[in-house]
Length: 138
Length: 296
Image 1 (cartoon, helix red, strand yellow):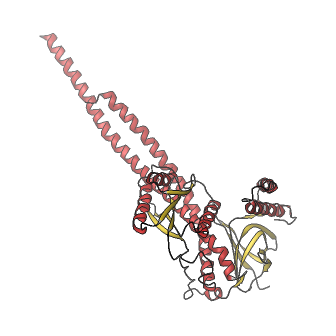
Image 2: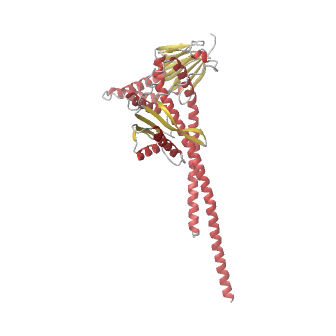
C-alpha cells in the first residue's frame, strides 16, 4: 500500500471528520464503492447509509451520512452531507423515536403528501440504528 | 421647574433603562459569537460545494436543468425577504425593507405580479402594511438557533413554486455581514440560477484532475441533484448572514443606547445637584433672615 488517503466529511454545521484512512467505503447511489489512495477522480451522489473507513492504525470507524456527495481525488476524499454523525454521537433515543414516528406516519396512509418525507425519515432512523447495532468497535 | 424628587425619579428611571440596554448588549454579543461560529462552520461546506458545482457545470450542458434556464417573459416575481423578528436593533430592518421597496420600484413594471416569502416578523409586518401578497412566512428562525433543514424545507417550496410556473423569478433580500460595524442589505437572484462560475483552471495545480472526473450517475443527473441543493445552500447562508448581522446591529444599537443613558444621567445629575444647592441656599437665606429678625 502506497499510503493513506485523506478523508474529510463536512456538513453545513461543522466538519465532522478530518482524518487519514487506509481505505474508505461509501454508499453511492449506484452502489457501494471503496476508495484507496491513487483512485481516479470520481464524483458520486450518496445514499443514506454508513461510511466506513479504516484509519491509520487499522481501526474500523463508521460514520452515518444522510445522503450527499462524495468527491474523490487521488489523495483525498471529500464528503458533503447534510448531516453526518460518528457512531458514538448517534443518539439511540432520538433514532428510536424518529423510527417510531415515521412508522406511525407510514401506517396511516391517507395522507400521501408526507409519504416521501416519512419514508426518508424512516430510512435515516433505520440506518442510524443499524450502525449502532453493528458489532464493530468504534 | 422640576422638583428635586422628580429629577431623582428620572435619574432612577434612566439608570434602569441603562441596565436593560447594557444587558441586551451583552446578550447580543454572546449570540453574535454563536452566529459567527456557525458561519465559520458552514464555510468549508459552502466552499467545497461551489467548487464541486463549478467543476460539474463544465461537464454538464448549460441547459442541464430547468432551474438554469431563464424564462422568456417574466410575470411573476417572488421575493424572499429576510429580516429579524424583533426590533431594538437600530436601522437594521428599515434598511432591509427600504431595499425591498427600491427593488420593487426599480425592477418591476406595471404588469408584473409580486409576492413575498417572509423570514422574520418585521418584514412580514412591512409586507402586510404595504398590502403585498405573502405566500409563506417563517417566524422565529432568524437570530435563533436554526439548522440546515429549515433552508431545505423552504428551498424545496420555492423550487416547487418555480417549477410549477407560479414564479418566474425568485430574488432574495438579506443583510450581508461585512463587519461588526457594517451590514449591507443585498438583493440576490435565487432562481433561475445565474450561470455558475466555472472552476478556475489556470492557477490551481490540482485543477487538471477536476476536468477528468468520472461522474456517477451522469454529470447531468448529478447536476440535477446539486442545483436544488445549491439553492438551499444560498438560502442557508443568507439566513446565517442575516442572523449575524442582526446581532451585530443590535449590539451596536444597544451600545449607543447605553452611552446615551450615561450622558443623560450625567446631565440630570447636574440638574439635580443644582436644584439641591438652590434649596440649601434658600434654606440658609431663611435661617439667616430669621436670625437677623430675632436680633432686631
